[in-house]
Figure: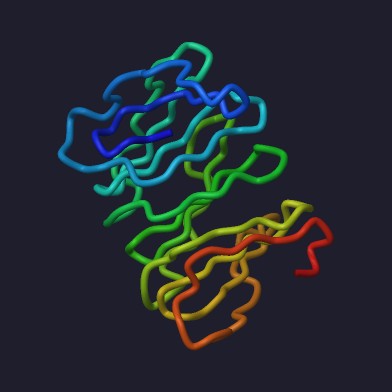
Length: 173
C-alpha cells in the first residue's frame, strides 16, 4: 500500500494485518506517490509519482534501488506489468506511453504522445503482445509490443473518459 504521506506499507490480506511500514520512501519531493505495480516474482515494486518520476523499490532488500528521474513531463498516471514481468508500461498525464525493461531497469521504447489527453489506464493482453491504453480523450489505443509501434486506434468507444480496463483470460473481452 502507498499512503497519502508517501509511506509504503506491506499489508497481509489473509491475516488483515500490517506486516511492515517502510516509512516515507519519497521524501525528497513534495509530490505524492500515485501508482504502484509489483512484479510476479515479488522482486520489484515500481512506483509512479505526481512529479513524473519512476521509483524502483527492491522488495527483498526493502530499499529504494533507483529513482529513474522524471520519465514523464507530468504525473505518472498509471502503470501495467506484462504477465511475464518482462515489460513495464507507464502512462502519463502528458498523454505519453513508455515501455521499460524490468530486469535491466531501463527505458526500452518511448511511444511518444499517443492520446490528446492524459492516459488513465493501461492493460496488456495475456500473450504480452498488445498493450491497450485508455484516455481522458475517450479513446482506446493499441500498441504492438514485439514491434514497438502503435498498432490500432479503436477510436471513441463511449461518450465518457476511459478510467480503467482489464482484459479477460481469453483476450476476447
